[in-house]
Structure formats: structure tokens, C-alpha cells
Length: 75
Image (cartoon, rainbow, N blue to C red; front, side, top):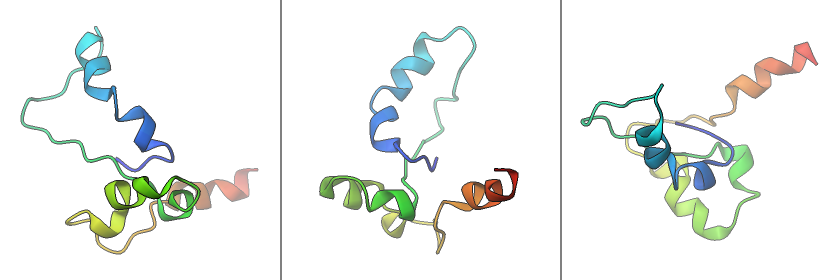
């Protein structure tokens, strides 16, 4: 999941899903948090290696910011 602050929400993500009455995840699913390339540059250095799309197998060459570029005409 690509999110601007994935380094923060991913810390307690599984605990929050487990405590929710409305959410559930299959045991076999693996959530990989990532930060889009535009926002990653504003994070602390340790975030880069852990959340960069450059190092996630299968991510390809993506910036992770497509939704925000589509929002511009609506502003």
C-alpha cells in the first residue's frame, strides 16, 4: 500500500485491523507499506531504504503519486 505516511500508520496497522469489528485480513496476505517518491524525499533518511518503491520487488518503475496528479483538475 502506497501512502504518504506509511512509515507511521503501518506500525499499528495489523493491531488496529485485529481490534476492529468491521475489518479483517486473510492470514496469508502480506501488506507491504511504501511511500511515493515525491513524499519520500521529505521523510527521515531511515525511511528511504525501508519504504522506497525502488527496493520493493515487483513494484516496477512507479512514483506512487498518480492519484494526486489526477486530483489537480478538481482543485
